[in-house]
Length: 427
Image (cartoon, rainbow, N blue to C red; front, top):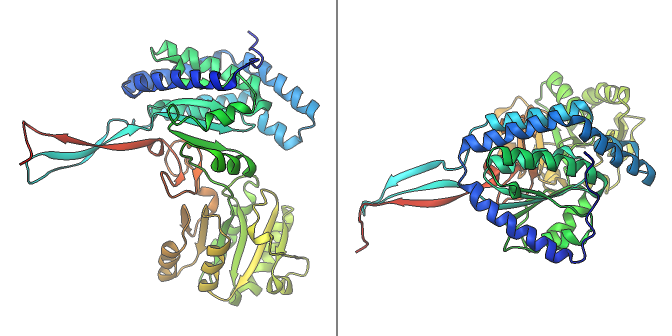
């Protein structure tokens, strides 16, 4: 079954408001849905993806051919591709989310007040979550699953380059929802590639409770600037590892190498390495050789270049750059004070790590570095919802409100106060 082409919509704003109204109505039903129905929907969606994988790959081929014709580079085409293995990954993700505890309806902090009433809090959905993302069609399934399990309706706007893939996945989602007796409108994938739809979507506070942008810096900056709806976002992932003079050399080597080279194009990849001056001469040459074997270009400060002859000079811009590539900035620092100061000035508050055997310094680093994830003796690549035990994530937030760090099911909820009485009146 071939999926439809983008809808020719005369009035995008009216289309978006109608979609928003339907999402709001579905959100009320989904908030009251029991866990078994939500889990049944997740499993049914997985079964539909499995049953229609040939159709999914055929629709994805349309996007790949169009992308190649437009001159998309190999990396973008790879992000766009839906292989059988990636479909298996989507199915497994749905099943994992189904296996996670349902956060909705959790009651906690119950206590009796002097008046006799009992006061506590209950975890509830945010309502309608709008997600704007680029390239990767698997985000459609991941985002829908996380929103569904957390009791939220979802309005999804994928990149135009993945239109056919996203519509094919959306059809599976709708069939799975209907099989579980849940409203199909609980997950809506925009049927238009008109950019005006994004402008409408981020200006509908009556219908959408929060916007989560996932994509390049330009997209996120635009959404953050123009949205009339609260935004959960992160911009850059300028992540640091500081190797202290009291670091275990092997741990430091392993952490610094893994944090940069395990994968280059992710937001939790190391972009700046800081090394204590007293160990730099012994530590950096061996590490630089390992980086060279993996094709990593080093850009360093004057002290770094005095140790590493082949190191290119780092500019002021390098310290503020998220490379997402085999390029690494290296700075030799006098002490932990200078390392923490550098991070305060240049970190994007995503993920920063210290390698040290000194507990006092480690505790100080934890307290003074103001990032969404702060680590001791661990690779920054662990800053991930799955690795943190969240099952999956909708993104990694560098905001301080409403969620911070990997945003999983709990990050897609809020709380309300609940009160139990027995005819109590206030006097």
